[in-house]
Length: 211
Image 1 (cartoon, rainbow, N blue to C red):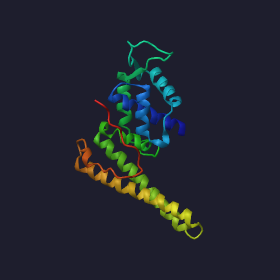
Image 2 (tube, one colour):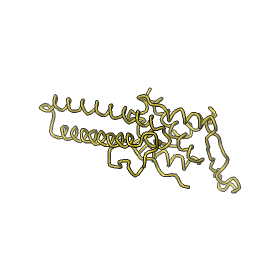
Image 3 (cartoon, rainbow, N blue to C red):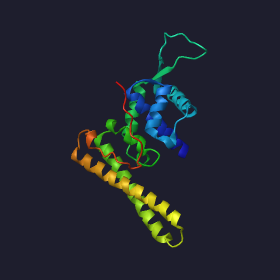
Image 4 (tube, helix red, strand yellow):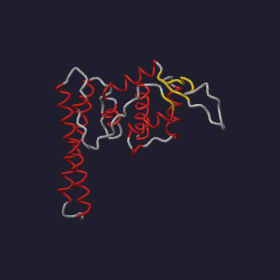
């Protein structure tokens, strides 16, 4: 199940990045690692099977070599450029509109947040509220665990638990600010200058695309 969730998140991220612009595998991997974060770095061993699956399903296509006119030297092959098909655009539109738990759990929330500019306002709100609810539940469980075990754990374990607690508290505050911002701008795209950018641990930011 976890492997299926990871492959689904990778599919969503690939389609989302190719929605911006066609790109070759090296550039796509670099952008994916920025979107998905250091601790989920994407290797070519993960990327190319995912690209092959999307090609087989007709969601992307090979647009040609990055420099098809250049001669092949030293056995090096030209880089293949990938782009979305019409079916791929429809699939991304479907995925970006999902509001179930799979969109706000740890595995996927940061990636969904990276594509909030392409996400309908009501969907953004549901995802943020779902994430906040999950984090508040986690916060409550952490408080209960610390109160229950305070007398039985050593100083270092307690310090580690406090560190985790502070991280969740920061994310809840950040989510509250985002939700407030969305409420002020219902029906339109949020002004990115108003989006909180503090260290929340909630996930990576989306890299800017080059014009």
